[in-house]
View (cartoon, rainbow, N blue to C red):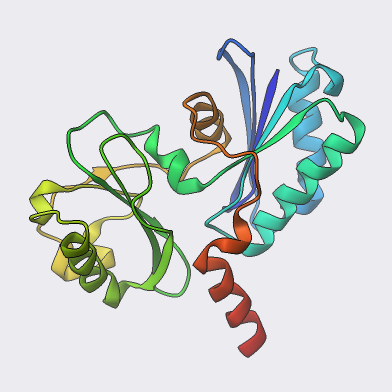
Length: 226
C-alpha cells in the first residue's frame, strides 16, 4: 500500500493506493492551521476505512513544498514518525510543482507551473516537454513574475510565450496584467491524490530537498525579519 500526505495548503488530504496504482480513497479536511492536530486522525481513518494496517504500507509519499512552511514541516515530521513504527516503509518526497504536472495533458511544449504563495507572491518553475525541471522553484512578487518569465524564456531559448505551456491555479490576470492575454491551463492545488500519481509517474525523490530550494530561504528570512 502507498500512503500519500498533503499538508502544504489550507486543506489537509491523505490518500491510499495499492502498489498496482489503484486509488482506494482520499480524505479531505479543510481546516486552516489545524494540520498538526488532525493529521494523525485523518491518516488513521484513511487506513482503517480500507481495512489496512500501518504495517501494510510499503511507501509514504509527502509533499516537501512549496507551500506553508509550517505545513511542510508537519508533513515531513509525521512521515518520519510513521516510519519509526514501520521501518520497512520508504519515505518519498514530491514537490508540489511536480504534483501539478500530473494534471497536465501531454504537450510538445515546455511547461511553466505557477502556484500561489502569500502576500501577492507566486511560486514558479519551468519544465521541459519530458516534465524534467529546467529551473529551480522561485518565489517572486506578482509584479516581478512577468519579467522573470521573459528572462527565463531567453535563457532557455524559448522563442515566445506562445511556445510555452502555462499551468496555473489562479487566473493570470490576478498574477500580472502583462500575462492576462496568454492562454493557460487551469489546474488545482495539488492534493494527496496528485502526490500519489506523481509518485507512480516517477516524479518523486527519496531525499528531502527542502533545504536547497530558494523559497525556503525566503520563508526563513520572512520569519527572522518580521
